[in-house]
Image (cartoon, rainbow, N blue to C red):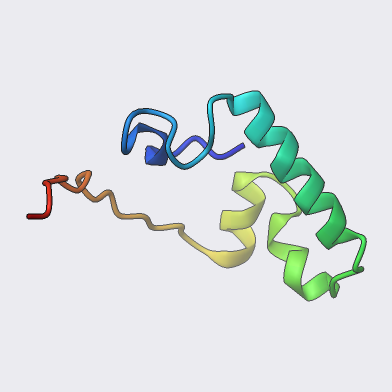
Amino acid sequence: MFDGNVRSLQGGCFALGASQKKYDAMVDVLVERWMATDPPDSVCEFLRGDFRDLVARRGPVFGRKFPAPKLFPLT
């Protein structure tokens, strides 16, 4: 489940819709369709296991937090 801050832009539900449950169901359908194409194991390999397994196999995971953009009206 994606739990990013996109939902807060432009009035609360701009990007993902009014319901997290509906959004998750839509993403589930898209994932099932993609997985039905039988992608090569090398594409999905990093998804197997939990976070500790990922770090053990691939090394440290880094991320960067950026401040939310400031919106302003265009004139």
